[in-house]
Amino acid sequence: MRRAALGATLAALIAVGACGPGDDNAGDGESAPPAATRSARPGEIRDEKAHVSYVLPQGWYAKPPDPYVGLYSSVASTVDPKTSDPKTSDPTAKPTPDPNNPLGTFMVGVVDTKAYVTARPRSMPETAETVGRAQLELIYPAKAQDVVRSSEATRLDGRNAWLMDIESTPEDRNVAPFRLRVTVIDTGVVPIYMLSSAPSSATERLRDLESIERSIRF
Image (cartoon, rainbow, N blue to C red; front, top):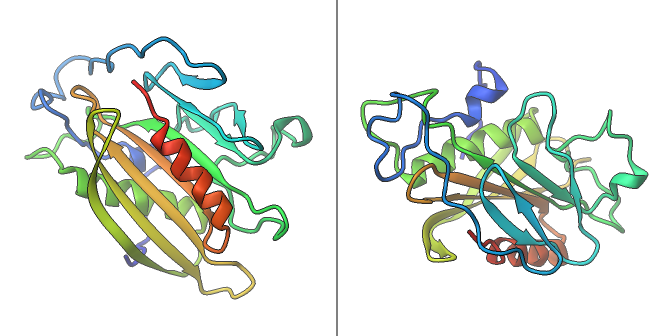
C-alpha cells in the first residue's frame, strides 16, 4: 500500500461513507446505532458509542478518547494514563517506544455513513483500506513503505468482518517498522472499525492485540 497525501480534515478521513445492510439511504436522517451489548464481563471495557465491549490484557490501560477531533469512541494502550500528561497524550501512538517496553495501542470507532454517501456502498475491504490509509498518515506522516501482509474476511462475535494487516517501514531508519491491524465489522446497522498498532518486532504486543480483537462482544 503506497501512502498518498490526504487533503481532507482528520474527521473526514475516517468518515469514509461505508454502508452496512439496510444503509442504502444513509444520507437521509440519522444513522441508527448498533444494538445494545450483552451484560458486561468482569474486567472488560465497554464502548458505549460503538456498543461493543472488550477485555484488556494485563499491562494495558483504558484511556479517554481523543477529545479534539473525536475519531475514536474508545482507546487503550500500554501507557498508564496516571503517569502520562493528558494534554500531550496522543491516541495515534507514534512508533517510537522504549524498546524494553514497546508501545501497543487499540482503538475503536464508528464509521460515519452520512458524511460521504457514494453511488454504491463501499465494500468492507475498501472501507478497511481507506481507514487504514488515514490511520497510517496519522501515525507516521513522513515517507514510509506500506505493505499489506494480509487482507481477508473474518468473523467476530458472529458478525461478518474484514481484517487488513499492514506492515509500515518508515524511510527514517531511526524509526522502527510497525504493524497496523484494521478491522471493519458489519454490525447490521452502522459499521464500526478497530485499529491496532505495535512495533513489528513486538511479538508479545501483537499477541495482546489479537487477544483484544477476539474478545470483542456486542
